[in-house]
Length: 446
Image (cartoon, rainbow, N blue to C red):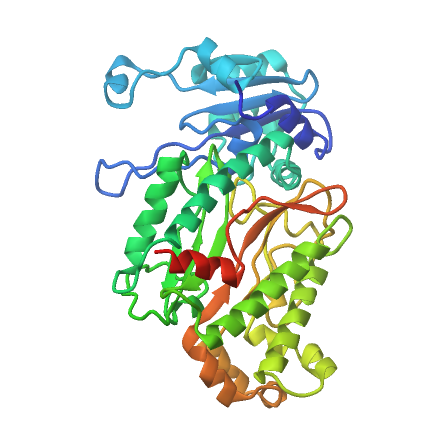
């Protein structure tokens, strides 16, 4: 049973192309570690995954937008190769597995194209298409990438189902991690437990490199060293991790105490971040602008930090100064799908907003039904940014740096869920405890 509807995905792409033609996408090949014969872990080209559903190396794909017929081109595996990599499924087996109209071996590529006699061949600009150089006069390298990217923005039901499975598997492991005592252990022990858990649960790999950050390490947004000791029960542990299931990703972050309960400063910062996330999830729906959701998260953060005394002054002036970007320095979230940072966040002609924090938004567009996004607000105490804020008078006047020093020992907090935009609001695909009392109940049950 095919995992995706190939005909539907191809039609989704075709409607964004300028004129009829033949779509040609090459799948990725196995890569070899330099100066060795060791294969690197294979990862399929994301656009090949979308348009064909194929996760194995060496395949290519054709789709005729006129006849709406698809052709999968399979590598021929010799008996010698099969000794090392296993037998290739039959052509009939591949046809049934992927739901395409025709499957042939890749040496038939020119013959198939000649028989179709297309007026145009759409290829991906970053791919080497020298294997069809005979048809170079017909090749358009400009239109296909943006067409596939736009199609990938809107998820079909079967894609959502795969992402829900990835979330379920990843979420269970996130919850399991909270059930262990980690004080005195290494971040890599948490890392290995997560990866082992998602593989046991049915994922093929991590969707991205797992982040396990304890102590002040959460202040480094993409901390992937995962190699330091978890020293104290007062430390926070931030785990940003997700599995990939049949090519589709989950992306979940939870922050919890190494001990049984949050310290008071950690509890206060955590609650602000949770309130930021809840406000966005409550308001994310069709026809809302994603940057407005980021600004909503900013507002909640500002209110919370003012109450703690970290920020001070007139609320409007604080907001207009974008000083919050020194504590929430990344975008609210991003599209999620085949890639963790999925395609299509910035349509042609849309520019970034050059303000602290919001300049790193990975999506600037109107929310519409079928989009899947992460909602991942955070509050961080980054030494370099705090130093920069202190040296910038128009920013420094809004900050109590003694209060910053008091809270900075927690490093940072991030909470991340994955939501599907529906007709009337959104559906949260992530089911991992995040309320303080629920996390502490798990931590106390060790």
